[in-house]
Image: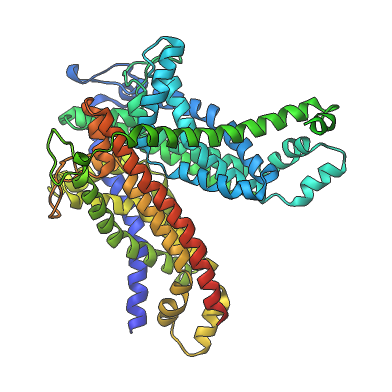
Length: 280
Length: 287
């Protein structure tokens, strides 16, 4: 009898996460969809003006902002992350590894508010000095997000590279390739899907990042025209205006979260698709 | 160096790649050192005793209430999410058949939860707990939101820890006549303890560092919370508030130092604990 009861309790616990996802969907969609309906889906997604005072809600600038900033983060973070993972797997002496690995883990544990603060105090003045702009914009946000996704990329790429059989590497060496040629031509392609899933995880983190971005991206709700101009991401849009929004304005912000949520679901889907297709 | 150059004389491309690899590693570690060093060096000199005064006023902007709130919030969140997480993982590993439909659904939803950005959690908490339940900005709303947020971390780490417990442990226990429940509580969970603990520590790290999910759920009252219905800002939210008011950069540096030291402490602790406990567990297994 007790066994039965406890099994049921464990089952309930396990079903809790299902219930949580359903509840999140329910609350977001129930509050966001009416607003989308009122604004019109196409006007909402493709409208280039966001003027709550004039009851105009178009989140195209925010979608573009999120995409630009994420692309920038991938461009800066992924190459450095993959190369660092290669260093860990093939070049790093054991002693150094014991220091560097915890350092990377610490990078993963630093709260985003501290990253944002660091960006505000160091990166923004730096960009300001070099380019003579306000310093807040796509470039700054991309650099900071690139740093923030480093640990994700490094850790997944490292375990993917470690899963490549040693015979691949040795075989390439035996055929006369240099160490670097073996790594680039043999190991990286073999670890490809694992590395890619790390990149997708990084994309998810960059798209969803809020506090760090809101402090350094400038937050202008207009379509940016250069890499230095300020942008507002979808996440920033929510955080900036939720505190005082009401009625349709609040609905539009929740609808922004719905769009963000759909983005994240798509990223998740591609992540599990990559994971399923993995050979190593 | 000369030896290196001779080695790569005929393959300059490879040498270039070697340089890239080394500079990437240097860049990664350099960034980390610079970030931590910058915060510590700039921040420590702004740590004043008045920042730790008992009560918060606009003059002293004390962070002590925020520290209390952080500890309070962390404990309550763990109280909810740890049993839930361990229970789910036990069901997934010990009871469910691994290919059943339910398990697949649970896996998918857990992965979905793990990918949801914290601002979406915050918005959900705001809609569900603050508005729908009518609790206004409160500890309770914050705790419930965070519990859902750290649940996937708890489930995943506990699952991995349970899976790492050798089959023979369970079979031995069954062979001695213990039931499933007794086997789980007496044999499997104790053996999986190090992994579970490191999951809890990971969760603590996420709770302490969280801002976006709390801004619209537990709110930003700078006073120490006592009841569950009090609004309360944690240390991270405190830092955000200081920055958004724009007058307190030095105080924000000081708060960042405290936050960073906590995070470094948590990270170090998880490393040490995992090493110690795994030694203990393998020693226990040999008995």
